[in-house]
Length: 209
Image 1: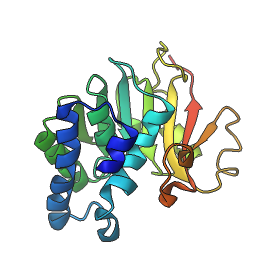
Image 2: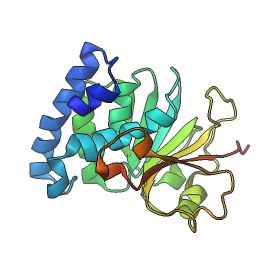
Image 3: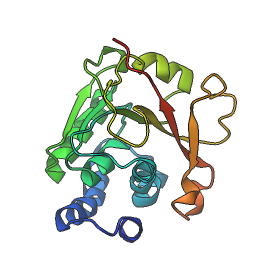
């Protein structure tokens, strides 16, 4: 939790309370349904919460932004970002029902009003979004094929509408067909060695009527 406050010092009391509550909620649910690996649950704030919030360092979301989180698993990166940006609307989807049930329970426990969670494949999502976020759910070519027709036309951020993707390692091969993709090293924002090879990838996508 100290790490969160160090990098995001302007949190409201409500946000601080929500970030604090996260740990107990995930420990409780992880005991019933294993949504986070046992070795990672003790480093929840670094490996899951702070990792998710790296997206905010690359592009903070304006009020009224619509964000789709594909393959959210237990709620990452969507839930930490929803706490940080209470005026942004987040739609969290995953194909595994038990994971979505955990997301719904955590969302309820935190009293987050800006999160909707559903068991759904990305291809079946209706609507347009400013950004589509995810954490290493698949390779970029497949991911783009799932969501390429779900981008809003109107721009309101410094970065163009499109994908903000959390991924690690050498992405040269994976991104070779996407010359407009930009990689941001998370180690530039956070010093923990866990982030040494981790990146946020921004890939602008055009609106498709």
